[in-house]
Length: 133
Image 1: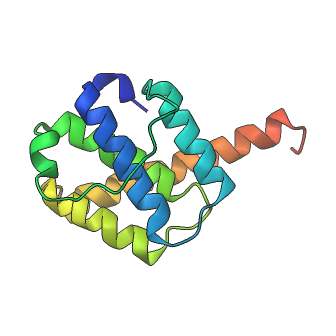
Image 2: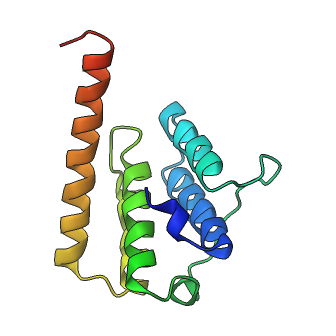
């Protein structure tokens, strides 16, 4: 979502942050793999580039403006819900990023709420598409 607004450096960093989120709970879900493939396509990241861990030190300088930070948090929240659960490890990592981005608890809750509603709408659309409604 809104990945085209990010610079190449920011896209690469977001891809690596998404990898951090996915592996934080120790479980690689097929839905998470699918979202990483979607990220790779949308951000035009080479299929030869393997995501690797990205340290959070200095992450605020890679994403210096509010808009980019919100795009990152929305996308990381979305990928954290891809497996149907927002695990404690994912929550802790996202809170570290939220803190580095100077995003308040209230604003983060607003983003989290929006992503959960988006997931519900996506599930509803899938049900409609597949004739389950």
